[in-house]
Length: 321
Image (cartoon, rainbow, N blue to C red; front, side):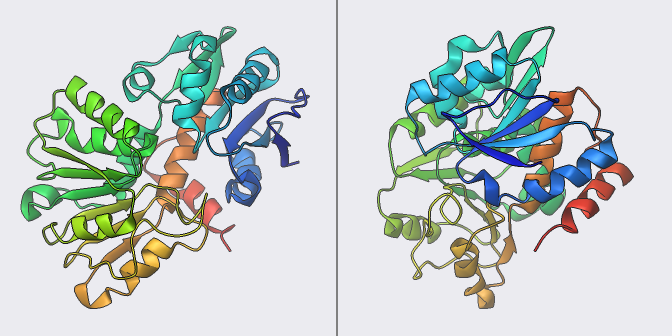
């Protein structure tokens, strides 16, 4: 059974259960994918349950959900999307262990249990890096001197920008990273993260309450730059962070972290076909995001490349409409 609960109507699990904390979890592809994956991974006796919560829910509502998972014996953990930062802030004191990346990112994308302790993890830095490596060729940044523009400053943006700016990537990193957001506090949090990791990659933060401001940023980017829609617009809410007048750089890569919904951002990139813009949706990010969390929650090994991962990808792709 693939159930969906409201945050205020949680039912104790009767079999080992992983939760999906989101906004419209019933529409996610994981509903069809999880049963097939569970059979392949030997998790046949487990269940996936969605928990739908409104955007920027009341802190007490986040605490209710985390307390339920923490205290329910058959609730094994959860994947958190959309609410990663808000839930982490609201329930910080309820976690027995917070992994170093969750502490640095100031967010939680995975909850798991070990020895009766509830653990908060930030998996996005890992899964976003795996997704980027799947469509950005080796040596790309060094050869193109391209830049990155990320629209939105939530948890995914913190993870992506951390991955691209970390010292371990020295010699093959973007020339600069630009991030825009409709509110200022998350921009400041992003600046703190980059200060903590002491990166030398220039970071430009732009307060952008109107899409036209994002259009103007596009015009400053060099050819081959990566433009990322990390706003949730197109999935959690309708629309795009750009206007239809936006002009993408030549040979740009447009990456929408969404893989479902109207994906207007990618439609806008498609209209720039004469500029040779490559379009990438969030499907591979979805695959790595979920496999990383499933492995953590159920304490199993799932390879990130190779025949086993390719088989899981094939199984998931067969469920896409």
